[in-house]
Image (cartoon, rainbow, N blue to C red):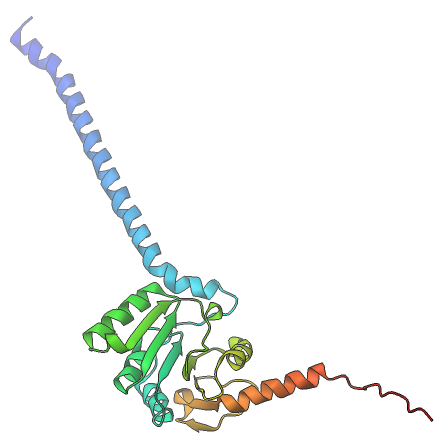
Length: 231
């Protein structure tokens, strides 16, 4: 066979090897793209789930950061108070941290772990980590009996249930500050701010007596039988 024939016969082999290399290159690229895409979706799921999951609950407490005016109104409403404070649905921790700076031993309860971790970091950075604590917890599974000051940024559909919970758990010396939405049946002792920055302040002695009075009415029979007198 001539040298020219050998070169001609080797062309299909070279072309085949080239095709194989190109296919391998495309395969590697596909694996890389799939891996990157899959990793991105996992990361997105991990970040988004703590924010989306609360919205799937029957009663949702969404994260809406408190305004500067709201924080000031809360602190103003509690300016004559001290002791323990809890922020129910503490979000990024700004109420808890501000309260700690004003002398409270402050705690926050929040379902979103990312917000809790951020709150802990922020408290450490601002030097109040010894007087603050943040917990990943469902508010309905926590007892608030140990707190003398309660702050809540609630939503209307949860406030009636929260009334019963707080009235049964809090000491009679406690104060409750509701932000954005008032409690449906409690009568506030005072309010501060206006519009979305309004806060309502409630005295536990008043709403606990209201609860006890309501329970007495429900448990007392309408017509009580009296024994007949003997003649």
